[in-house]
Length: 291
Ligand SMILES: [Zn+2]
Image (cartoon, rainbow, N blue to C red):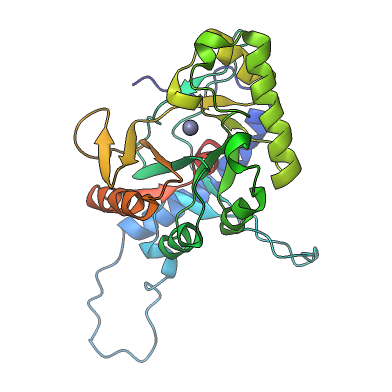
């Protein structure tokens, strides 16, 4: 697939972000070199001093570098979610072009990563929170007000783990592309931006269309609402199994769709088996895109 290079159509803010990523790239390359050039020690088997090679970072994926640790001079007033990693970019999200937000179904990347997204929010249990914590998964959580307004605070538990809340419209009309004009779509999307800001303290950057259908009018409304991209999916964890648009396994850069449903545990287990079998690490889409 074609790759968008950082040098094309870069905005000032994008260039700033890439400059920061460039610093991480140096660290990432160093970590990679350290991992690849693990020395074969030929010294005697009994050594009184610990070898320097058992650095914990040697076993970590080379593409992720945790950053954003609070500085010693700036005390943190309250507990905050984990620091978000910065990735060495081999993909740059296309900019809004001619007023239209880009649409992404998967990320063309060589990194061994996969992205988990969870939609709607209609079914909510403590088990879901516990499973996400147990597996250490971070997800892009696309909520609709209509599903979550009875208990929006439930999702604070995922935010505390490091997941992020994204936009899935106010009312979840799966026929909105056909039934709603531009201004009505914009109201659905902007209204959910306000709801998310009010309840979760962050304006979403990503949008998922209810049902998955999108149109140029929707792309325009998404951009006008201040969102960066429409996110569809490449695979689903559904009814306790995996459904693939292409092939029969997860591939690097795939975006996986799940829902907050009663079969959440079975779906998450199906996803877990699939990403482990494929040798892919679950990372947060927003972190990878730096949005
Ligand atoms: Zn939905």
